[in-house]
Length: 113
Length: 193
Image 1 (cartoon, rainbow over the protein chains, first blue to last red):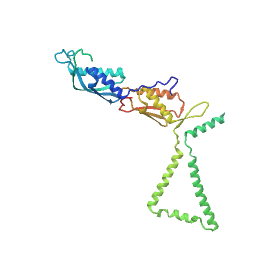
Image 2: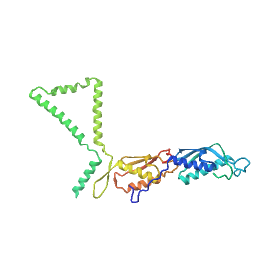
Image 3: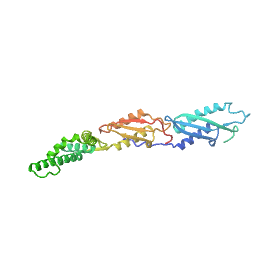
Image 4: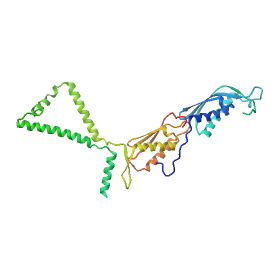
């Protein structure tokens, strides 16, 4: 049944790897480290569902901030970045992302991480 | 050459359908024994000898007296006979497929097991659609093969395209009876793999 062309082979990405990718993307999008982020994966009618819980990176008060965006705006922007990231990095279509911010990581602007 | 062709047809028929000869032999033997017994009793009665079990006259009065037997016994006996009769009729009428089909070939008589077709369909469908073959099963019926797939979460499974591709692949294999593929997807996908 395979026909004349050679078998194409298969690429699997384990759940654990997907979680790691999503964690890294979320950490980057929220401006914090991977250790501050917990990601839970499930299925939403055939698409991937993400539950992200973690702290968001915030500049100290009086430091000029990150362009003055509110934490909520940044969390919502992070959702889009995680979604496109999952598509380009892991090739997975994300259906729903729930973000729960559990705290803040105070980070100095321009600090090398 | 017509001789070999006929023989090949016979062989293929035997390979794809289960033989009814055992049932036929058993039924015929039972009938032979019963008739031989009745005939023997008749001869013994004419000769005035002692009957083996009962005389023909006793048989007739026994049949006449049947309605007098307890209703429960009659009902049970009737049910048993009816079930046996229905079973025999089904065995006679049903095709008795053995889960194999003929792969039409010029030079050889080829038979394919439906399980082999099922696993090939699973492999083909999952590799075409990007799903995990460990989470797909196929059942091959008389004319349709149903492939039930649990898609991978986040990987869209193009059911119509895969069905079309499977149909094309199957059309290239000269199976008798032909198989039509159908794909069903589980509502929930599976995360990872």
